[in-house]
Amino acid sequence: MGLLEEQFEELRQEGLRRNGYAAVELTNIANGTSLITLREFALPSGWSKQKATVYFLVPIGYPVARPDTFWTDPELQLAGGGIPVNTGTNQMEGVPPNLLWFSWHPSTWNPNRDNLITYAAMIRRRFDELR
Image 1 (tube, helix red, strand yellow):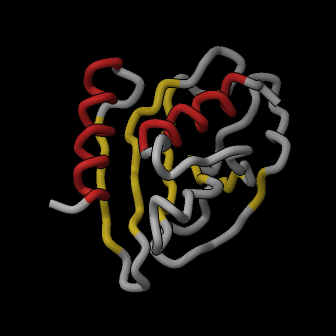
Image 2 (cartoon, rainbow, N blue to C red; image 1 turned 90 degrees about the vertical axis):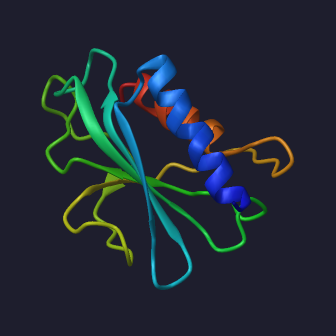
């Protein structure tokens, strides 16, 4: 089992333990990246939905190369109907079409410390910002 698979299993266990998401999937893409899917990702109040599906790509060269940006359900909005900032469309190979893309980047990343759980926590912090 490689590093990505080990960290994927840790991410899966973390979701089940903390119930932040119901299921996790890993899909290897032909271009060498991998797609992580977090099903039923719990959203804080202030969003148009209570749960969403979240997708992010694990780049070639991970963990030195960090994950960057993520996608979610296309209809997700702020509770008042507003469009979240720094979102749009950005189709990438291996990511399902027509999703809402969040242009959100880790401000720091240490490949000796950070992992898929760290990145999922960064996504959670973005949803906590309600903007």
